[in-house]
Image 1 (tube, rainbow, N blue to C red):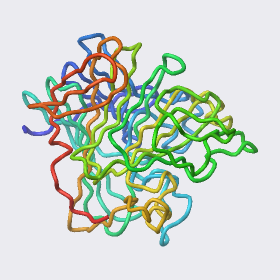
Image 2 (cartoon, rainbow, N blue to C red):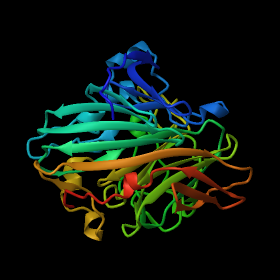
Image 3 (spheres, rainbow, N blue to C red):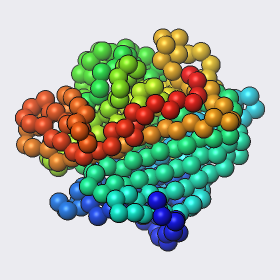
Length: 390
């Protein structure tokens, strides 16, 4: 790659942000918290933007919120992941960690004929360490390649990505699917408290093997494979990927828009996907009942969203053999890669039923009609460079 250049920063949707484009894909990343959005795929077809942005992003009152809520949008990296309400060995991390709240430093942008990369970094304060963020666009690939390199960090910690997608086309407009998973479970406690203006409907702690058969507190069953649904409620569930897979995936088909969004990961680095279903169930500030038709599809190694202390200690998932944290070594850098891609799909494509590697890319097969192939560097997530223990 050639020498780095320093890009200008400009305000987008209320946040100072840096931008990058390769022609057909463009992205923006906020300085505060490194939140990735908006991302525009397939600009040559008019462009499609799947990521959600908080409805208060341009409001003056947003500047009085915690940094993570002020910037809330798209995908961001969490170290440690979760609420982090309980201190851990004298450490008090902010919600979703410093990486989702503090300002990132711009290192520079690298460009060559086929690759564009933004490089950011952050020195951690609560527990010493360094995180390097790289956002890559490749010419001809309808994808954002995201990599975080963690170095100088010692001890156990949980991690996660926090991608949030918008579903603007009404109830049931998104069709969800996942690669084979070994455990599905609703969050172990009620997500919200009606006395505080929050409401949930899924049965706490309920286990499920199928997305369309998830118990509710009213005796009915919920179908988590279709969204938006359950308007007026805020719920959380988790699906734990089969660790024997060479790669795992999370996919949403948007039939009306004519696209599929897909995230690809190494299930040994990001063991689970947390589903944050936010559909008007919070009536306290800044949510005020207006955060609707949004779903977080969050690739994590964590005990749900409870934070570092419950994730590091024995918990219901770790006792079942599902990793909820890593043991980091200060002299062994550890990288966490994710690919977030999009592709146009034919009419009646249905939900994704399979993702297969092809020479130079992947083939995405629908449950209905047809399949689509896109160029992609799948080895970005399948290269085996584990340097931290579980």
